[in-house]
Image (tube, rainbow, N blue to C red):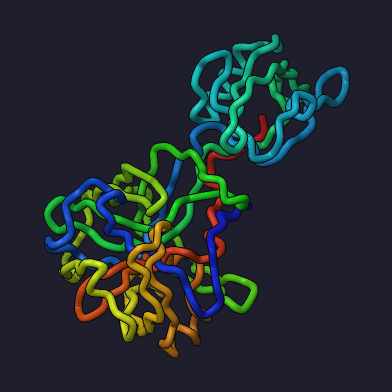
Length: 329
């Protein structure tokens, strides 16, 4: 299981003001929006065939480790085979079958670098398929919180932060989809260990199309969602944010967001990293049930004086679970 890492400080949390014009080219602040706070399931293409682990291939003449011998490592992403784009597990499987054991060239991405690797697949004795000895996946999925939805265009913002691996390297993702999610449990956070929301995707029909993932979150457009229970709200400029009481909206049980009291301890309008607030959780109920801010609550909207001013963003670990599309090749 791969963990996506973000920043965390016990009790005090960094907050990003997500309504910067650079965050998403939609409508400027000042229009009417729906308040978020509902959790959603996000399913994201990994941008290729991501290597999770290495394995042996049992052939007629013994055990082979083609991927390991070629220098492929867990965490690498296989993006092309002999110049043909690899986006899914099926694409890689087809490429290895076409090779019939002859040497091919794989384009590998590792962090921000790319390299070409020469490799020859081995015919597995049991299945008769050509394999290189890797466990791969092409999809990541997890949960996060929607911050706002434009009432007119249905464009939304969520998460409030980039998606990165455990080394804080951004992940290249593709074909992101959004699903309705129900929270079924909470693992409480404690000092030195982030907690997490446990959620279930309610069905296999997406409720929104994600169109952009960047340093300030995930953005897209809702489709076929019931907004009758959503609360309209105005967006306030950062200049109106002040030290003092405020509220965050989060879902820690079921599908309905609830308000929880916080205190804004610091406001930094000129923060270059888009981390403009430091907040403290003061709501006793939230502390009792979750221990504070936990994984899955990133994107929870912050409301002060009846207006939306920002979103919770940086929590230490957001856990993304491998989707069903996973297998050995």
